[in-house]
Structures are given as C-alpha cells and as structure tokens.
Image (cartoon, rainbow, N blue to C red; front, side):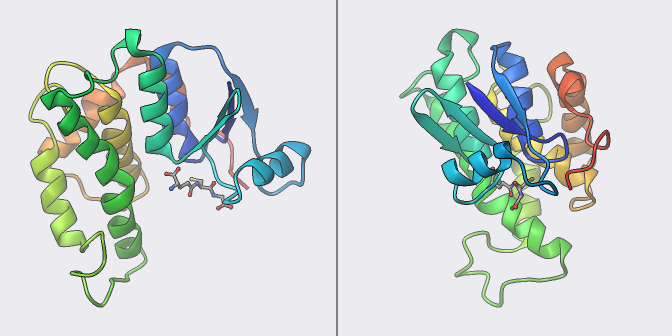
Length: 200
Ligand SMILES: N[C@@H](CCC(=O)N[C@@H](CS)C(=O)NCC(=O)O)C(=O)O
C-alpha cells in the first residue's frame, strides 16, 4: 500500500488509522511547494491532487473517511469497524459521513467568516446547528460507538481534534474531554506532529 502523506495535512488522520491497525505501508511524503515525481504521480492518480491518497494494488482511495472505512473493512480482524448490518454499523456510518460532508464545510466556512445565504439548501447547514450536533454526538465517556474504539473515532474525533488545534472550534468540556482521551492513544501520539514540518 502506498500512502501519500504530509505531516501538516489531513493525511495525519489516515496515518493514525494505519498506525492503529499496525499495517505496513509505503509512506510517500509530498511537499506541495516542490515539483517532484511523487507530486506528479499524486496529481495523476488523484485529479484533486489532495492528501490523503491511498493506493492499494489497483485501488485508488481518496477522502479521509473513505480511506479509514476501506482500511477498517480490509483488516476486519483488527476490529475497528462494527459488523455489517449491525445497529452499531448504522451509527458508525453516521459518524464517518457527517465529518467530511457536514461538520468540516460548516466549520471551514465559518472560520473564514462566511456563511451560505440559505442554510436549508447548504448540505452542511450552518455552524450553530453543526456545533449542537457535535455536542450531541460526542460521547460522555469511552468512544463514539460505546466501549469499543473504532474508525468512527479516528474520523469524527480526528476532525474535532484538528478543528480545535487550528482554531475552528471552541470545544465544550465534553468535547475537550473526548479529544483528550483520543490524544492519550499511543497511535495518536506517534502520528501527530503537526508543527514539525511545513506543508509548503
Ligand atoms: N475532502 C478531502 C480533503 C483533503 C484535503 O483538502 N487535503 C489538503 C491537505 S489537508 C490538500 O491536499 N491540499 C493540497 C491542495 O489542495 O493542493 C479529505 O477529507 O481527504
């Protein structure tokens, strides 16, 4: 597996996922400020030219949540995904999809002091509704799905963690405590060095 990566990008989340799984992979560092064969490869396999991008044999997987979902299903024995068809799986999908579809665009727009003129037609609504949803979906204790840590925590919790790190979300005490629990995981600690090297 080839993981296109930069330590200042969302690929930190997929790197965390790979570390939780403890699976071998080739890490391909991308520096967007320099033309390189690796950057050109990335732009060829992923027309968005974005990180993270994972290549597994003939499969090209892009989008943080899709990569985490793909990996958790590929390595089912590592138990980072609940069983297909289970009630937990229904909850799991919600955490995976709401992160990139709804939470991230709302927080990103708000961080630029922008809001869609009609929150009913914008898929992400608005920041007020998103913050209320984050609060409701954040677990009081343990993990998103209960006692078992899953890829839902990496995707949803990882997004909350980076949103707080980059000043896009002021965490409530419950959200701050959840992020703190995530940060205690050895795989989190090994993969989060945001400020070690610049992205460009
Ligand atoms: N929706 C994508 C967003 C990926 C993304 O925006 N990645 C940024 C780094 S954090 C990137 O590669 N930017 C480089 C560019 O757009 O040229 C995901 O969740 O993976």
